[in-house]
Image (cartoon, rainbow, N blue to C red):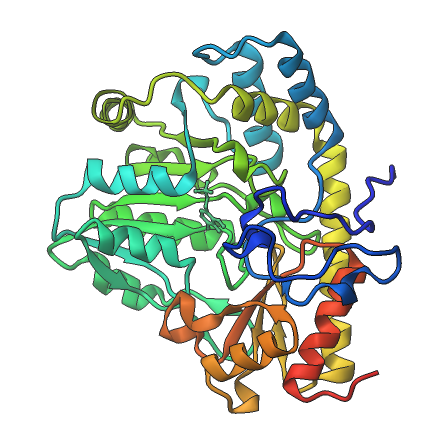
Length: 407
Ligand SMILES: Cc1ncc(COP(=O)(O)O)c(C=O)c1O
């Protein structure tokens, strides 16, 4: 397989990377890299927090963008056949879903879409179900829009996270319940939901007349030991209340191009959402670079993506082996998808803030588990989308921080 250079550490400071700047212009680091071979040690605080990769995107995407830049005219832009073919072929081949091109809308991101969906299809005070521990902007979108958070915590027995369907049924039957936001695959716990699980969720939503919003932005980052399918694929009968939010931004590392897909099979729901985008928010046309990149990624990026997922799988194994050898008190919740690892540190008996302070003092920045809900207390979420030499340095720092012997 072609070598895409995933093993090569990359300089990202002074590129306006949010992950690397930590809000400061140049970050609190000494020069990086001063010399090959020394680089990770030169960085005072390694950023392993944001869901953003330290890899350049697929060469086909860079080439398509360069091509478009050459033209030099960047006026208001629409969508073309190549875009729709790329999206519908990708959905069929990679997500098991036959999507009609008319169902596909674009906007600036999955979270903007989720916020606008909440505003379009629910009213202030309505209940919306989420499943903590969950990517916190999802819960915040419910609360910041003045809707009521109906929490259906995932169950964890030390092995695999599962949904609590009995409780989900109860919440869905609450008189003010209007919608559910499903995270599939689930950030941060890394579960890829099976078709049977997705069908049960869709049945509960259908029985209670809830809109089902399926956030599938991590779907293309599924490991070879799991199978991802879109919620859209589990039954046409659910299509009249389904919205799928997805895109190429996570898997191809394009979030700075601010482009996501909102796939809505039902004509009525789609017309209402289109009205929200166009009439209320003046969202006219598509992002030229975002849709150019997405088209190239879905058309010519398959080999790169498969190679990326293979490299990430190697990173998962690296961390699993490191923990087993050096920090056996920590338990890696083995991910089925996501380049974000969910690590159970509860056996250390330390609070989240204490874990965080120790890790930062040792020079590594991860996300505290409680960020994703009280259920995450004592866990950390760590991004592993970086070269192995950086990951190794990060793990050495974790070992230093959390008590393992240093090598
Ligand atoms: C589950 C999930 N949804 C949405 C997003 C954000 O997507 P966007 O940048 O398109 O708003 C993320 C980013 O990490 C995510 O993990």
